Length: 365
Ligand SMILES: NC(=O)c1ccc[n+]([C@@H]2O[C@H](COP(=O)([O-])OP(=O)(O)OC[C@H]3O[C@@H](n4cnc5c(N)ncnc54)[C@H](OP(=O)(O)O)[C@@H]3O)[C@@H](O)[C@H]2O)c1
Image (cartoon, rainbow, N blue to C red; front, side, top):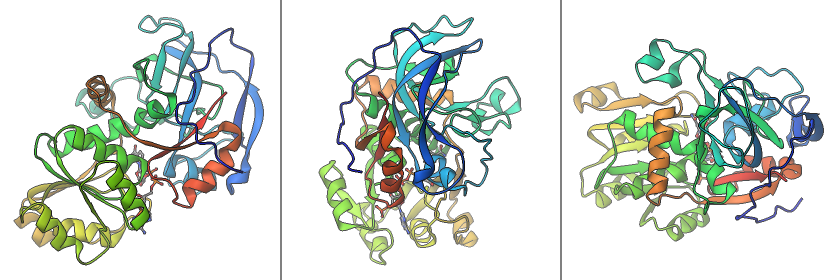
């Protein structure tokens, strides 16, 4: 199937809510073809929740492609299952007690749901709560015309943004923001490297670091993707797998090393080269390791240089607030192709083949 290249997709009109909706449903694990269109009951918002008429939903690596194949390390699905985590849409109905939203609001859906209090939420680390639930993993997702989500997970977005760019920021934006916070902050002149900057999360992380005034090195293994990154305004585009990477970083950062490296890959050589160019006192931060779970660490070098390895599970509501404040100041991300919901199998093929630079999304009609 040929993907459409809609990048300015429309926000759906919200009228009366039907009792049945269209959804791309999984009834078993397998290749992209197991994503099939079905009719499903439209969910009804519970107290504190909103019903969102989905406009755009992201296709991510772990939560979508890996999960659909049955290899997700912590997802256990009851079939039929609806995937779909970060999304954009229009508020279509409100559950009891929701006063902060209005029907018709254009919203970003942050898919990390943590309800109630515990030691982690009280400490500002809600992403570590054992009660964390993800849309599309533990709760029905947004590969559908409608999805229910707690109202506190929705942010009203600027009218001028299109659904695909809102969806691309809904989770990746707060994850990037939380990485910066947990690692000690990114600001004017901070020396940052984003490994795998062509990934959906990587590109948003790199663009956010640049927006905040950092000096940014981005990496990709492919000349064609490197050219795209240059076209997006990155001046320092390297291949982290090449042995010359270490010297090249030295030149860009004038021998000082990186203060923050974002590495969500789990590729041993990329990790090792990252540690070699990490500045004294610097942090290497990870929110994913889809290429493998074990990487080399020279502990002698780590402690003697006072460096940190920081695991950041995902974003939280504080990071959501910070992210959308930056959007209000002009921050935007860059998206890749948009497919239709019916083309979900083609979108999964495209991401699985590593053809994307930035976020791929499904437009829901
Ligand atoms: N914790 C969270 O909330 C969260 C949210 C979103 C994503 N993530 C994580 O972020 C990571 C990326 O996810 P995504 O959906 O953004 O990915 P994606 O768009 O599918 O991109 C994959 C990336 O991996 C790189 N890559 C693939 N094979 C490689 C290899 N052998 N060596 C070096 N680089 C390689 C590609 O770089 P090239 O340019 O070199 O091809 C590309 O940048 C995953 O680990 C995912 O779990 C975490």
